[in-house]
Length: 194
Image 1 (spheres, rainbow, N blue to C red):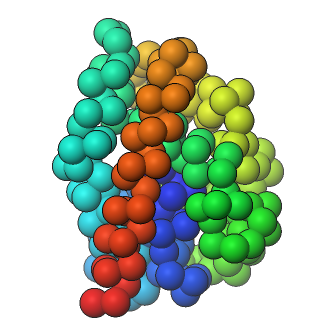
Image 2: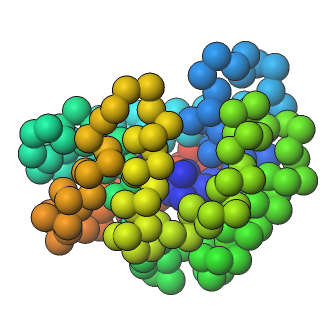
């Protein structure tokens, strides 16, 4: 799952939620130096990633990617699943409107900006200004996100055109998401309780 799912799967505690997002931005960062709630969020992020990456549904969904897309299939699938979450937010969200949920996340990130890992501090303004999390709701939005990810990568990748795989397998990926999401919600809820 990508950023929107990580945020949705977090408890409503702002620093823990930010930490769950920050899990993708701590490479080269001494996590033990972060605020304890952000550390807990990073641990939740890693547990969610491990649960998803090793789940039979996710592994099956990855086989749908044609060459040359298989190398980046896992990354793209995380973003594709965020698409279905955003598109059907009324059913899968937290009860608020997606735009309000995202506004609350950005407000919390701004309020606690000094506690964010440096890479997330740098990226936050662009995330907010370009409405990255809300643009997940359309295939065109997903395409823009993946093209931006390809530009940020160290090597050129097929991420720039991998949205063709979403279009080709749209219903199948949706079924994969619908099968995985309830199990992931249950897993994250159990993690919150411990």
